[in-house]
Amino acid sequence: MRTLTIFVMLFACGCTQTLPANILIGSNFEQDEADAILSAFDKWEQATGREIIIYRGRYIDADYDFWNMIDNYHVVYKAESPTPATEFFNDWARMKDERDSDIAGFGMLSDIIIYWYTWGEDFDIDTETEHYDVIRAYFLWRLEDLVMHEIGHFLGLGHNDDPDSIMNIHHERHWPEPNYISDRDVDDFCHLYDCP
Image (tube, rainbow, N blue to C red; front, top):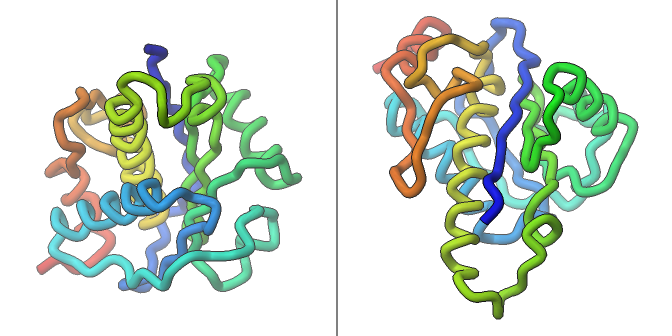
């Protein structure tokens, strides 16, 4: 089975969100993908003891463009087709990292964008494929891990070099071990926000 790789980018300014933030999830995510995204937010909430989001449902206009940065909605987008904005962020990602990413994200204070490269294309599988459930579970685990990192940027956190931190772009997680928020992540969060 081909290994998924993650490349993540930072667009954080040290600013903070007003918590809890209203969050929408693009309507082009499958339900199990939306569940993985909500699980990522839940792990941040459990680790920090803070209510981070109020989930407001699915976002119908799922194509991302520059105006979405200032539309007063916080959305997790699934970028399936090129737009000037997704092409810009994707080119920036590739300039920063020479390898081709299978799944990538871009987190900023306004939105989170997930670039969709893998599912249904590189794997070329359908629901009748042997071990479909295992492959799908692995993919959803990687999606959750990526979104947890991008949530950190959404909250105003930058990258760090702690090997255990979700905000380290080279952090190591081993499937099927659960994804988690590290003590360093919580400390960094608490420097920006009041913690219980």
